[in-house]
Structures are given as C-alpha cells and as structure tokens.
Length: 410
Image 1 (spheres, rainbow, N blue to C red):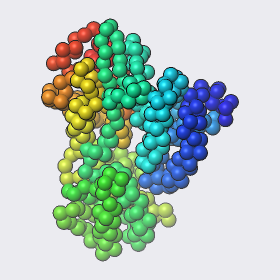
Image 2: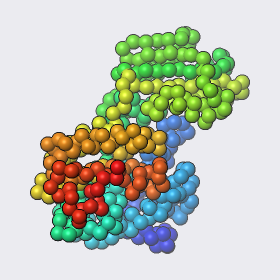
Image 3: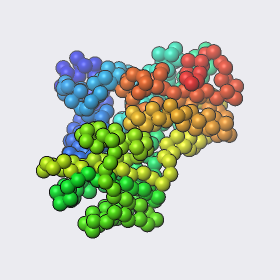
C-alpha cells in the first residue's frame, strides 16, 4: 500500500489514516459496500459515499471509473486536495492535528461523509490560487470560522458550511428510495396478474421524511400499506390529508422507449422536483409500472440555504473583519443544480440574505456542489468553480485586494 500511495501522491492521506486508525477506515468502507445493495436505496447510498469509494479505489490503485459514471473526471481534483490535506496535517500543532483527526473520525461516522472536509480543502486551495495567504484558523486555534485570508493588508474570515438540499424538501429523496424498494417486489407479482402499463401519481401534503432527518419510519410504512391496498383491491384512487394516490394508464410519450426514455418523459411531464421510479416486469410481457410523487408545495432548497446562512453569520463570524460564507449544497443532482442556478433561485436567496441585519459583516456568499468539487465542466458545474454574490453594502465590497473572491459571478 505504501508504494501505491506514494506513486499516487497520497502520502498525506495515508498519514491521517494512520493517525485515526486504518481499521476505522477499513470498517467504514466495509459498511458502505454492505449497504450498496441492488435497488434504489443502495444506489443512492453509493452516490452519497462517492468520495469515500473514490478514495478507497485510489488507495488500492484500482480503476476509479468503476465507482460510477463520470467519477473518473474527479480523480485529479481529489488527488490535489489530498496533497493539501497532507500539507495541512504536517503544518499544524499537536492540538491542531487533534482537531483535524477528530473531524476526520466524525466524517466516518453514521450518515456523515468526507465532503465537508474536502469542501474546506477546496475553498482553501482556491483562495490560495487567487493570491490570498490562507490560515486554517479553525483547526489551528479552534476559531469559530474556518479560514483566515489575507491579501493587500486586508483580512477576511471564511466559514465553510455544507447544507443538504433535503432540508428544503417535504419529500426526501432518501425516504422515496426506501419506499420504492419496499413496493418494487410486490409490483412484479401485480404486473404478472395485471399485464399492462400503469402510472401511480402521488401527492404528499404531509411530506415524507427520511428517518435520519428526525422522523421515524411510521409514515413510510403507512404509505407503503396504502399503495399495497390500492393495488390488491384494484382501486383507482385513494386520498386523505396525508396522501392523494391516483392509478392511471401510462400514456406518456416515450413509454415504449425503455426505462431511460420513460424516465425522461416522466421528468418532462412532472418537472425537476418530482420523485420518479419505473418497474418493468421481469417475466416478459412488457408490463411497466411507473410512480411519480410530489410534495404539495414546491421545494425550498434555496430558502433552506438562506436560513442556514442567517444562522451562521452571527454565530461563526467575529464581526470585526469582513466575512465570506462558502456554502456547499449537498444532495443535488445535475438537473436540480442547474435549475437552482438557471432559475436564479440561489441568487435570489443569497441576495435577499445580504440585505438582512445578520449579513452586516458578510462581504460575499459563495455556493458550490459536488459537481464543482469533482471538477465537472460547465454548464453542469458553475463557471469559476462556484456561484459568488457580493454584498454591495459592505464597506470592503469594492476593495481591489478582495476582488478575486467577492466579485459576483452573475
């Protein structure tokens, strides 16, 4: 392993792994692989832990592209961030390294990932490339903010924060995937007895939250039971204050074009916020059962980011220097991320936040996602590696020294 790590430029990562214990990493990857079972939830878990799976492949000298489509493009990006990690680990005091190692251990616990740590590393590297001196104040001194930048005699505090898009959804994708995996085995038998093409439309006024987000599995189990009852009784509709279910013939264009074409047709029909699934009969006969679910109101991902910023600024910025909130929006896919950008939803939320009292010390807000982290090209990823919004009312907003990091990208 030493030779592989050395040739891949991963000595710093290996040093951190040794400090926290290689058995911890081994156990973590074993648990992730065990959870990546066939089905929607298993594939979602693999996507959630893409970074860990990529790192494991790199450690083993394997083919990173085997982790998933489009992942290989991020190997160079990840490798450079690993070098950053090694340099930081070597430069910190004993107390600073203890904080770094504790953050690493936390990232390998429960539903957590290494994304927050790598977001911090990427922001630091980006600011250094823009000509700033970067000091890891959070790790080195336990400061409330993460980075202290300096350039041209001006110092700037940076908070690096990850917010899940699930916080702005009434219907969580994680809960939806678990529901689909529960229903899917029953659909095979149902399609065998009722050959044809069907569409189950669901509106969920009370939402459907993932268990790790603070709810239990009762709502999911109840919805599953209602779908099973609807099918077993051959009913066309079922509705109450928690859910509206409608079973209809599947008449969408593209229904004959295979699962991919059908999903594209459903996406056009129901929009980017809909949760979709398609089950095809395995015994032949061409049976298809599609499901589309929505909350009763639009997702509020941008609003969730705004709420987090309003809480962060007074809690983690000292107020004595200009501050930057570097926000990482997690749990989005390409379509949703482009929608948030193209429809100016994130821009609107950020600019509205910058007018509030909590933003007095904030000179700029930046937003990025996994697409920028893994180095995806535009238009999937934002130009310049982030969306950036300057606060025109901040007294340092026009400072030439800060321009590379605060000038708005839109």
